Amino acid sequence: MKYRRISASQNKHAAIRIQKTFRGYSKRNDCWSFNGILNQAAALKIQRLYRGHVGRTIAISLYHFYRSKKVLIIQCFWRQCIALRMVRLLNAIRINRMATMIIKQWRGRCVRKLVFAMRLLIRIKQATKIQKSYRLYVGRCRSHMIRTGQLTTTLFYHILW
Image (cartoon, rainbow, N blue to C red):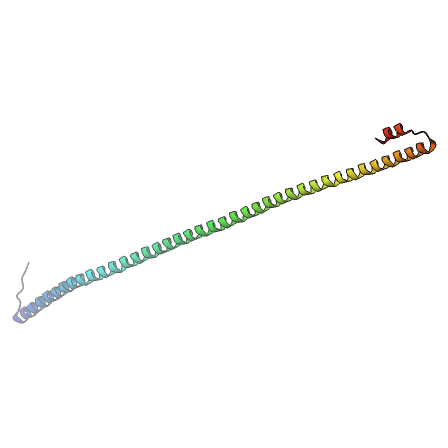
């Protein structure tokens, strides 16, 4: 390597250039470290924002989960209420049908007793008519026998009783 001789003005210029380069390097280094601080602060801010977003998302999903769970609980109680109403209604209908059956059986029994009594009365009336007809016949026969002289007093009492 060959070295050239540098003049004083060139030497001054070279010194200024070295100082300029060093100062630029120093400033860039400071900027990088400041940017590093800024970058770190920005990273912390981004992390804070992201964690807040994730927390809000979880909170919203939990809110919807518990809300839907509450809705399901309310729906369950409502369906249970409807089912109990239906059971009560069916029991009332069944009790009503049973009461109607009992009333129907009772009325049928009363009507059968009435029909039996009416048939008995009709039989009694018919028997009374037959007895009346027989007594009239016997009376006619007696009167005929008395008129013709066929009936004696002993025979009269015997026929009478």
